[in-house]
Length: 399
Image (cartoon, rainbow, N blue to C red):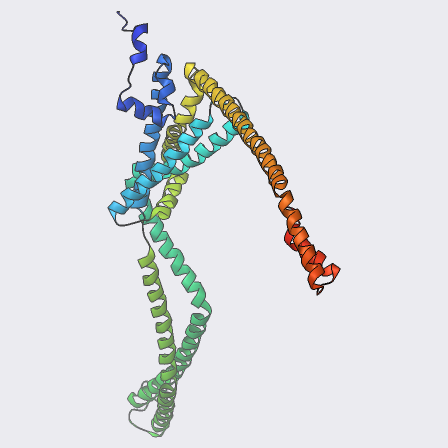
């Protein structure tokens, strides 16, 4: 097979495509140094492809996550692009930090791995929700039904004591009324049997005994009606209180059911229940988690696994050159500033000396004039003259 290689004379004219430069940018490679690194061109393009894949996956995962939180699809897409950009920035910073100088340092590499693992683990959740969407919706329905039952049990437990007391009171009243009605029914049956000759004296008709039983029956019936009149409102009051409690429970239950949804946390809980209760789902869940984690870790893994090439050597040498140049430039600038300051000092010193030399005679003349005036006027003491001389003629020290 014929191998197509670039001649030595043409390597300096290599111009990467925009796509290649974009992949290099994703891999945090410097195009100026990469142009002459023939082998590393492809290596860093591969790293850039892994970053691109992770970036795309992160954007899709976050967009789907936000679609479960907000109702506006455009907002979900924009938030997905924003979070995908953050993941891209983190991945590029992780890759940039793995270089020849610190590639073999354990702690920085461990930190980057843990960071990538945490991000990948969270990003795997929306993807798994999408992949198990149908199964999760079934589980969400079952979980919501269980939540309804749990809510009903909690409500019943809250009102249990009050409802039990009302029910017991109602039952006691009904039992008391039923016992009284049983007495009335027994007296009525005894009266009827006495009148038809089937009981008691065996005499048909309204005889003395039948009349006595009739009076006893009427008396018991009147007592029953009085008790019924007195107890029925109390029984109805208990029924009303129980009905109010039941209505309150139903209202709270209905309000609770309106809060049930299939949001992100609810679906995550459903996914956990699926994994816990179904071995087949659990196996595929952990397998998908591992795959999705590898997608997030691939930029770091690829940067670590790919061998070092001429680009890394150039980066190291270029950095040394820039450090040395920066140091030399700093020293030169410091020397220039010192030279400037020294020259200025010398020039200013000469100027000051010349100034005092030139002004010496004038100061003496002014002193003679002040002394002459003081002698002629004799209005000022010697100390006053000296104060004026100091103020007008002596120099002041620089602060």
